[in-house]
Image 1: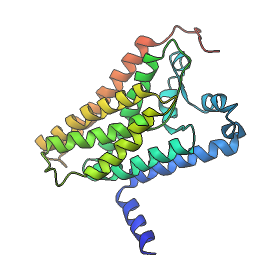
Image 2: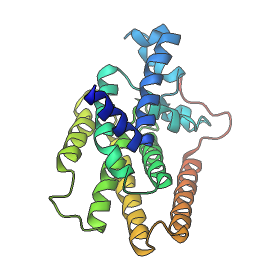
Image 3: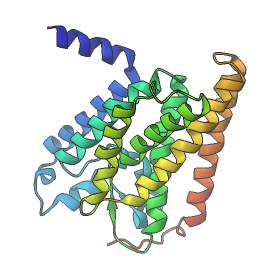
Image 4: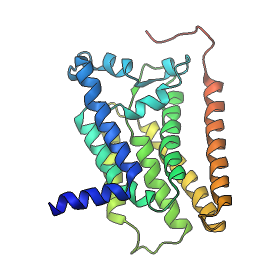
Length: 243
């Protein structure tokens, strides 16, 4: 009973992370209950593509939403479990240190840049990319950037949680068919965004309205940059490579 109460308290202190974990788990099982191909290795690729996995030729053919939906798609239970354990171990630590809008922005923009990086690298290949790894690595590197900006003592840094998350998430890159470009793009984005947001919080003394305004502008600029890069690689209307 005590463990259950601890879990409820922990979840209450990290509502965004808890919500992300629940949504990912829900999507994994709900999609497979609705489409039995998710349980078949023979039809798994078709299942992943139909339910939102990222394929460069499709994404750049106008299905831009795949850069987002693929963050909630996982190849198998092991893939899901490792990602969710990594997110659960590190997400709440960053979430409690920065504004919610900043945490959400770091998570999703890291994931989107990871997806876009993957798409650019595989634009001439039929590669299926999915999973929250890029977004989670963004959270990990953002926490690292936060610790550097605020000069957190090594004793105060959640070393064990960070190492566990890195091993679980980056370690997936050693498995076959795992997209490492998404990992690199997500990690770099998280570090840059985390560093800039941390500097803003430090200079403008959060929770000042000015700090929140600048963070909002930073996130809007990031969204515009992603859109610009996407449009640069977008295929002409009606041009469709994937079969």
